[in-house]
Image (tube, rainbow, N blue to C red):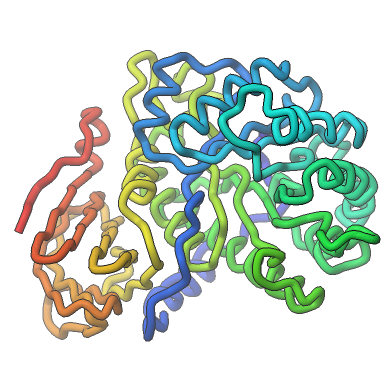
Length: 444
């Protein structure tokens, strides 16, 4: 993370909204979707050493991945002792660490870090599987013309990746973590003139295993709608690009190129601490599941004292470390979305829904982004749509269940179906503003 500005001009929101509504209403949910990544819900640990309370709150959220990276790491890596402490804390909460090596260090130095954690195993609980090389190279290196950035990244990425995998060929390396999904850069690096996705000469493994990028939407619109649309458009591009590379290089199985979001959030501290930002997080994680992303890591656990100003991108608020709406929506998905992703269809553009299915258990997240009133709905888990004055919500889970409910404006509901039992957790903007956690509002 460096600066939260975008090199791209914002598109007209009306056009984007039309595309998004079409995405909701024309969705094909004829079968269960792909398996949900076991490291889907991620965060970033900022350079300043987090307190014990921050680590504890982070563990309680159920996160499955924490990235150790950012601009500061590129120019001033923490000591190995500090990194080892953080890695052990992350692994101790049953999450995966993702460790960044610097784009400015030598390949030998990067290889030594891999050796320290994965070969020598200096007290860490397990080897580190997931790695990054560098952070936001366009911003950090003079904002050069987009068509020149690919060559610059290729120059450092390939030698460093080759040296790291010489030490441990089993690791997975992601990059280049540009500050935005910039078409010219990703076209050149992923299957283009500066391709980093081929095999290392003489080896059976590849330089790069995953396409990673960052995004902080810069518009002044509602994060729950406009911010989500902004990130959604980039998710679609990332999926298409990895599909293209996999076909070009015949990458399949464990060698398949995957994509992930190394950093995301709204554009600044004041907007980060909003209800709407939390619903943006829920929608982004839903889209990452749908488009087969490996992880989406928000920036960050805690920084700038949770002050709601400047570079406060925390998911915890202020001195009392109250979880924000972003934390709560991440927690819903980290703890309750397992197995396979299930698309949802809504008859109302203000409500979105999606779910997961594992064995006989089904979880459904419903988010009402309307700002006033309440809406009655009927939810079908067998892909049937209802006709009437209420909102029709449907998912194809092959489970014969239908329930009727009411959802208030600016609120989210998590429904968990497990055999004959149905639980519903309710979380609203009022709850968020009062610092309250989601509540169990009904068991049937």
